[in-house]
Image (cartoon, rainbow, N blue to C red; front, side, top):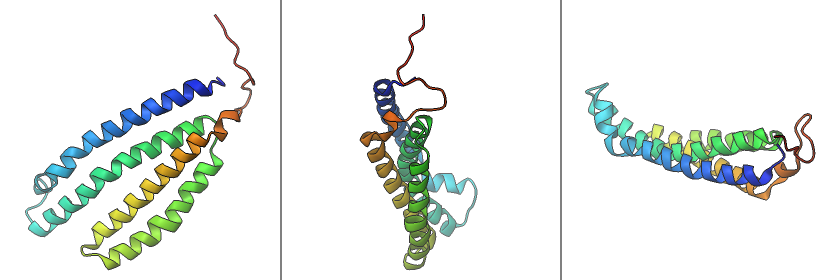
Length: 153
């Protein structure tokens, strides 16, 4: 509707709600990873690995939620090319090589892979937040959207 003020306030509220929500959903993963894994296996090594991965996932999902909200907000405003490039660059520069390297350098390797995914998601969310706050989307126009919104009764 051409109302950057409403979009900005709404996005900020959504980010707060989304981060809190994803953080709360992560609490059972963080604190109950072992018992959750025991529902599927009796192998103590698998339970330990799953509990470690669940801890990384509990934190990862907070940043993933923020990244999703920011990507959808920017995309809805017409800013799709640069956020897509940012996501691809972060995946190619951080997650893929970092996942390979950390899975080789750490024991257990699966935790290293998830740590790389966490770093990628954190960087992605931070850069998308920077882009959102910088605001080039505020002047973008979608399709037939008028330059100034029409008020209808």
